[in-house]
Each structure stands twice: as C-alpha cells, then as structure tokens.
Image (cartoon, rainbow, N blue to C red; front, side, top):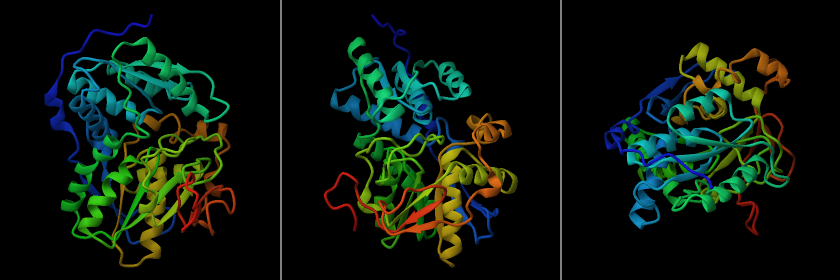
Length: 358
C-alpha cells in the first residue's frame, strides 16, 4: 500500500506571492531586428505562471467538495505545473504527489522534492500517447492507492483556464493597447484563460498560438519531442481552437537560439516555451509594423541550465543554432506537411472536430 506524508499545515500567507508580475519591452534581435514586443515575466512570481492555475484548480475542487481538507493531490507533469502545485499545496495545506518521467531534468527533480513533493517517475513512454500517456497510467494507479486523492486533470479542467483571469487583468492594466497576443500552447489553459477577457477589453485582438514540432495539438502527427512545457501527445480539451487566428510550430534549435539571444540582449530569458514565443512575437512585431505585440514568458532560465544553455546538451542532440530558421515556412492547413523547424499556418481547427479547417 502506498503511503504519503502527513497533512501539511496550510500557509495561506503564501497566496500574497501569486502573480503581479512585471512586463518588459524586448528589443533584442530574435534573430532579426524588430520594433519590439512586451513580455510578461511570470518567472518572477512564486511558483511561476502555472501557480495561478494550480491554486485555481485546488480552490475550485474544494468549493465543490471534490478535494477534502488535507487530502492528497495527484497530477502528471513535465515540471512547470509541478512547481505550481507544490506552491498551491503548501499554501492550501495539501500533500502533493507528482508523476513525472525519466526525461525530467535532475535539477527539477531536486527542486520538486525540496518543496516537499513526492515524485514518481515512469521509465518508458506508452506506445500510444508517449510520455504523457505513461504518466497518466501511473497516476490512475496512484488514485486507487491513495484514499481521497484528487486529480486536477490540468489538460481538461476548466479551473485551469479560470486561473489566468488574474493574468489577463494585470495585462489590461499594464498595457495601454494590444493588437497581437502570442501564447505557447500545452494544456491550453493560459491562452484560453486570457484571450476572452482581453478581447472584451480590445475586441480586435489577434491570438497567435505557438506549438512544438512533434506536437499533435493542432493536428500534426505526434512525434518524440525534445522540448518540454509546450506541445502535447494528446488533445487537451482546454485548448480554445476557435480563439486562434494562426498557429506556429517551433523546433528546438529555434527555441534555444532565441533563449540565448534573450539572455545576451535583454537579460530576461527562460526555457523552451519562452524561446518559442519570443521568436514568434518578434516576427509578429516585424511583419505588422505599428502593432502592439505581447507575449508571456512562463518561467525563468534556471531550470534549463543543463539543457537550453548547455553546449554539450546541444551537441548530444544534434542542435545546430547556425541552421535555426529565421522566418517561418508557410503551409495552407495543418495537414499539408509535417512541421520541421519553424512553420506557420493561418488555418486553425480542432483535430477532433469533423470540420478540420476554417
């Protein structure tokens, strides 16, 4: 029988550290010159961007009676939501059990355990659904072993999306106007959560989604992915397909090149998602002169010192930054060609819908 630590003491004062992050103007070449865009620095808040979603999901479950006081929370994670749940668990008094996989960075494993998380690791991807399916398989076993355990199900939980209302409200105050919003897409939570409120504020706002090559979210075939934190091997139901005006797929070389350029030229940087959205936001600012462009940097660079910022890692994975794409290849619909490198498509649809394109 699986056991877990005794109920932790709630620390509600931690909730004062949630959100309220700054925006900064980014003008570093990414890789070409551009007029600049605004970046919201979620890595400067306790727990990062996904702490907003984690707190929202646990509070919603408590209000509905699905999560009892002190009951364990069990979730699958590639790392970022795990830190958010560690924060939410401490603030609200719930032990947290996370299911990761063997590709989770050693530094992230150490950090999660340092925050009191019990971490389970699966050692091989599932034949269908890859690492995510393997993690969820182990998660279901844990739910059967832990009485009263709650699974937030970040991929399909509307409270994930609702947690980003505060992010939207902050952007609405921090920016005088916004024409184009660029969002990375993994669970689909933060893009869906901020576009609705911001379009009520600025009705003409365009939304650009940024996915990873090898991700199946927007209809591409699922492939093994080096990048973590964006993309998916499954189809999360939190993705607001109808809200997107276009989608870009970014490869690891492009993301790494952008992260390093950000670190050298703007000081602020981050990991895979940050590099991907920065490259697309710079492109959007360049091809739409006069438009106000903003994006969200979900976390900072520290988790990625052994990957994105490690030359040996790049060599081991055959990443040549000199060959990173400087502009996207255009495809007419998501099924026209498999995305490699940087690809753009102006037609977006739910891959599970009978009507695949619009």
